[in-house]
Length: 263
Image (cartoon, rainbow, N blue to C red; front, side):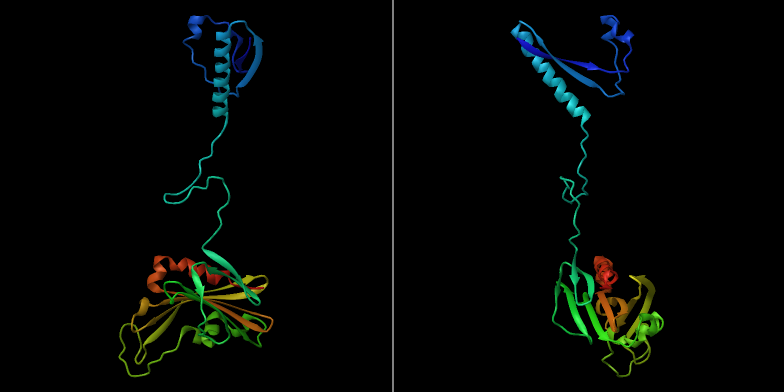
């Protein structure tokens, strides 16, 4: 009967090793640093038992060589995350792209649209499902300015649109305490400003922390992005309460504000 015999060939083995005595060769361990070639040849033999053993040996060698030659890439996954078994790129499901009339913005996926109108020219509003203090607003109003820089510096621009930060509703007499001036129950501090060119247009970016005397949320972090295009002033304002800000809400607010751009 026919059977298959497999032989291992390696160019690194010297002919002297092949001619070594059985006693020496049985105690020698070979380190195969170069690729091993497996050659299978069909031969004729008349003994059925030897034929069966040879076939099993051939299959064993082939399976073993395939296991050694293949490289298994483990699925990378952090603890608590699903393994990316098939190697497909993961999609960012934290945000959803929103295309408005003349602008685009990334909206947190777990925020819902709101019908509340809080500012002049408001065309879009989204709120956090669990806390309406975290929200996103887009305002579009006519302007005679050709560029956002025509409003002056970012600080000067903010003074012209300070309605975005809210208005003080109480005008009674109060003492100066807790960082508030006399007769003031609200304050706003500019934490950072930046000017960037996006698509050939200058954009203003402002980070403002507002606080009220009642200590609601410990204050509000408000990020404002503004630019001018086609005779219109575009403003995107995203915010979150101070307490939630440091619990992870900052990444949603920052991404939404910085993703805003005019089409």
